[in-house]
Image (cartoon, rainbow, N blue to C red; front, side, top):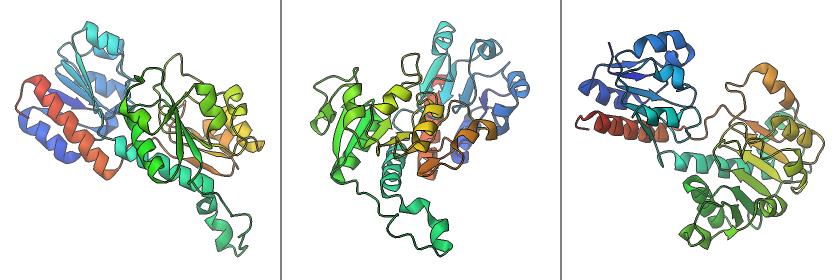
Length: 310
């Protein structure tokens, strides 16, 4: 029976480090086979997951020997942290390891949505030559509004600053004297929505942030503003967003996360035929490089937690 169970994809070099120290089961299919996953937890000392494996009380109860849960990413909304704490199970996120990947995704999405041209290759291939209608906008001189100003948002801010953008941010939890405020104006959420040409979300999903970007919030934005959500599904009211784009009340959006994941064809139908829309499968923080960083960090921290030499 395995000491370490890994239920979602992980860099195989990092997996090999774990195998050298402990009996390790690596099977990314377990996330879609709860019965099999549950069966492997009886002897497990460590469980390593990404964002889809739901680490709740019922699952924890099947792992009486669990000492640590490693999260291949930073969000913890799929992990019952309180239940882990009550069982003295250490929860380890890969803090900082994928910040760069998400920041690049946000900046790339902003460039694509404001310029517009890169989303219309089929029209050019068909010979329509739509130069006038493909005349987009530049980032320089525009304002990016960051909802949440944690480490990822600050990586976005520095890159936006270097591209000539103005930065406003809302984060009631970040100290007013934090160095990040040197390049960003500390404003209210309403001010972010009112001022920004690009609104990028960087908050966890909580009761307070669920559907934070709803029809009212969308109506407060500039009609040609764009929204980028590479944080957590559920922060944006997807139906209201789709309706706003379809009605010409919003300039576009990039969504990497969804209230329902994986996004089904039924849930995705609301986005059908929308223009200036980018949809990706929760991949903003996952590049070849970030996968290596995240995986090696979690392997090291899990080994430390289990008392092995990393």
